[in-house]
Image (cartoon, rainbow, N blue to C red; front, side, top):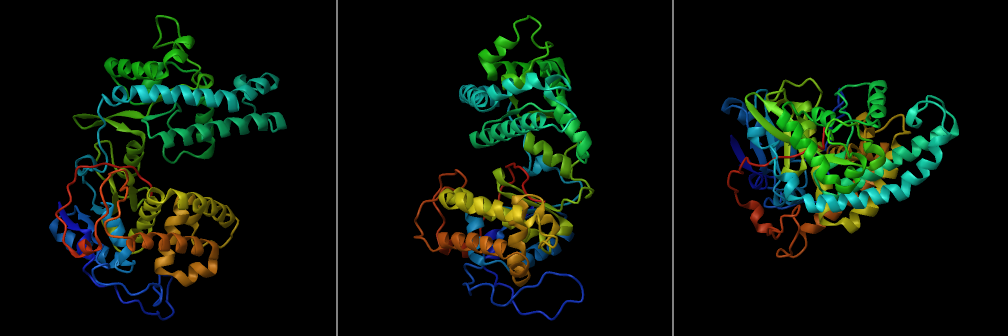
Length: 459
């Protein structure tokens, strides 16, 4: 694989930014005064980000297109991304995502290695859910008419209140699980890609019903008795006494369990067969495969419309070869920069993100948003905002001044990290490594190893 350090992009001058003539068709424009001049050393951040997988005949145009796309970005932001170890990787149909390190097989010892922390977290989460949501739900549900368990097709206020509490309960649990960083999740039936609202809603309702550990394991891809035993054992060990209270029979693997009321957690691990290779993936890597690859883990021709994604645990932005030039690399860099801001300055990020979520909610009422995709969720709101801030700032300021202001705050805060003392330590996504000195931006980096994995965040 051809790998080009982001530092080499840092040695390239920024592309001249001139005011365009009125376009004959919709396209991004670059305004002259968007950025302050920066030195070539600082403008050099891009190439160290770039890794290219296509064949040599295709690599040169893909590399040139990616460099050209990122050259309009302020070099200090590119340098900051480079310091975090971020790389851009271009893939083509047939490339193996597991071999490239975009996704990775998890060790079967993962749950056992973290079992103590997982059990403590599981018990604490169950206690919080019981106090906040389960007690009021137990008072309301006996009064419901309709389906067992309180699910009703009616629209009466009592049913609505139960539904609201259940949704809040699920969101609270998910937020706490994400904060913990542990490889667990609430059990839910997988929702197929492209499922409509009716199918997704029906699967969510079915997910609330009692289910045996054997069925849970099958939903997580277990295909052999050994895999079923392994997965069921993980669920039993993770939930400890709460599980023992629910299942006392010897046939504990096939007895339906009310996982909802017991707040049982299950491993966020999925058995996957890649040709002759059996791997264990976490839920995010499994989801990314559904977007990018076939059952063998090899990249498919684009059918989902996904052109690029940021896999943040491995600091990789993956782009299809046809998306290496244009707005997509800048959009994905927006995801990267938001992640850096969250990690480097959580005190700033928290209030800033609260304002961002409110601005996103307001934008959803806008019949002419800066882009339809920006209304998808707050993450895409940021990424689209950064793309327009970089490529078409006047349009962004006209259509969504609140988003323009928030992106400008993010950019200026990130740039301020580059003006701090060069020897100031920084937490590079938990790496514990000190920040690189500015002078290093102009130095070529060695070919980045292809050994990591990640999760999708972008489009």
